[in-house]
Length: 135
Image (cartoon, rainbow, N blue to C red; front, top):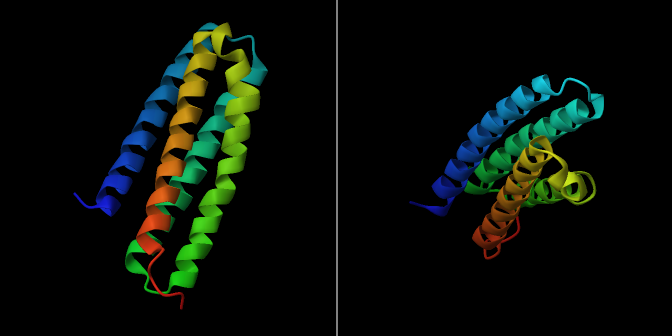
């Protein structure tokens, strides 16, 4: 399996896992229907994962099929810029409260999965395009 196919497959599997984790989080939240901040955190994590899924898959397709390397590097920078809000979500929102409840633990898992997939995509795009001439 090529690196491109592996990366796309990992993103699709990660997106399906994020949907399943989101459903589990909503089920846990319905039994604890007292927290609006937890609902906001769930929605934020879902938005981050969806946005990073779309941008990173677009970057992977661009790096594989668009021959103009300047466009590929623009997508690469865009993927890197999406790493900061996800990293903030993990370090400052999820990790300090991971041990409080199962819901927070699931949020942390979803956000960590997102960071791992973004990092894998950035590494793949960088090393697959580093030797191509800049046009």
